[in-house]
Length: 279
Image (cartoon, rainbow, N blue to C red; front, side, top):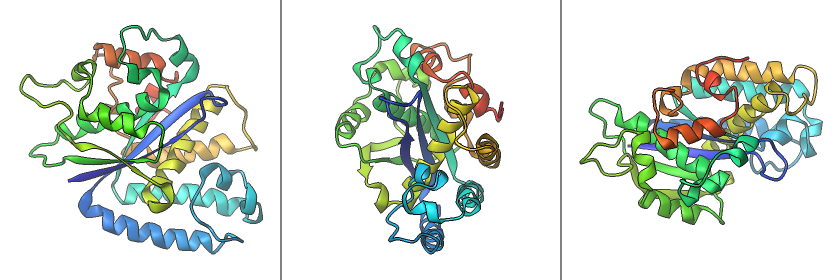
């Protein structure tokens, strides 16, 4: 059995890119991961001048709120340490990225309604990536529980979507004639509050790292401080071997309507990033 914890970064009203990251792990590895995160959280909390409830990526990196009183090098180290740690834990990263300009420009006439909302489109893409990755495993018993950071307005729709996915998705993962739809997903999606799950908080940090890579690297936004892009690249270089590009459906050989659409709405550098190309 497997578990995938998912969080996102980006705001439709102010950000050029929307990124969702899933951290996929075997259930047998999860207890140790949770214990190790708890220890890391205690160490980080000891640096913080107030009562720390959860980790918020942008507040850490840019020294907002109580983080202003934490040394910048310590804050950078938190990012780098989590990137190294996820590799040590041998967890997989699944990344869905949307360029808002491309999303608005893409032809949506033939799409299921769920794809007209960025959160739902990205959430479905993560589920499809889980399906691709797990169904390819030899002798796999890896049905997967999906936990998304709580989105009260949309998670109910996502549950229905995964329970009865549109046929538009079938060719994306090569559904067999006798294969049940999304047969690697257990029942539906579950919502979880980020402060209840350390792994979701780490997914938030990673989603933020990917979003800043696109924003700065594609020239949509400037660095907040000299060397920010270098730090982002160092983080991605640490994680690159755990990013599963083969599960993303970005291969040009996949000509189905779903894959074509997800390619059309992705940032320019997304496909390269999945191959380890850091500009």
